[in-house]
Image 1 (cartoon, rainbow, N blue to C red):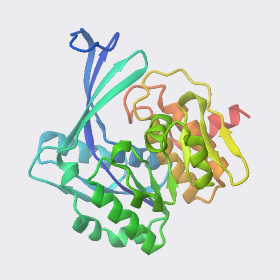
Image 2 (cartoon, rainbow, N blue to C red):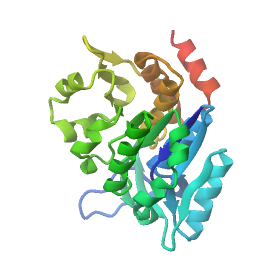
Image 3 (cartoon, rainbow, N blue to C red):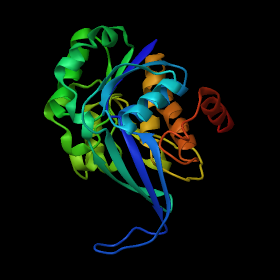
Image 4 (tube, rainbow, N blue to C red):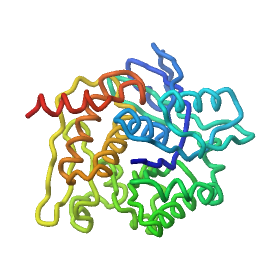
Length: 292
């Protein structure tokens, strides 16, 4: 079984501070580090650590970050033949951490040089896949094109509509939608719960420590989260998406797949870095069994 992730590959530039600065204010930081990230790469790592074969489609620059990012993916046993190297700079994300929460600015770099032709070159890999995962840190026409191609090939696709500002009507053809609560409100307004009824067992809204919510065709279902001590929430949503893809690709029912994803996400926040805390399957299963 193979999962193809079409998405962003960034280097995260992480700064920690005791509190977020106000408008126009300067505060002292207490941490600076660089760690591999990007929603696409994060979701690929999450799926790979849970035991699936993962094919990554994306782009990195010709800079030192690009070399490091490719090496990191390969260390996770991820197939990087679908990752092209551009002449420019790799994408970066500037992540500000404070009190277990984060604020993020993304500079796309090479990610926005991915084209429809690059997707066409990966058609055979997509066709062999059990699931395709996408996000919105790539050029929007490329995301739409990939969704359409997956539909034509009969391969189910998860779209994580983040950042939500890039979401288009054409993207509603995705088999599964996975916004968080903030993205759901941006996409569908404050009554986003009603929108779930248009996507039974297809759209799940993640609620952080409170789990996730979806509509099963008859009723609204809240799948509770797992107790956790958050150290760094960066990458929790990406872990959820990678784990959800694995569980659905393996044929699990929707509720059980969401529970599996919740467990994985709860583990991911207990360590530093978007990819640093992503768990393996044994850890996820153990957490699920302990909570029964």
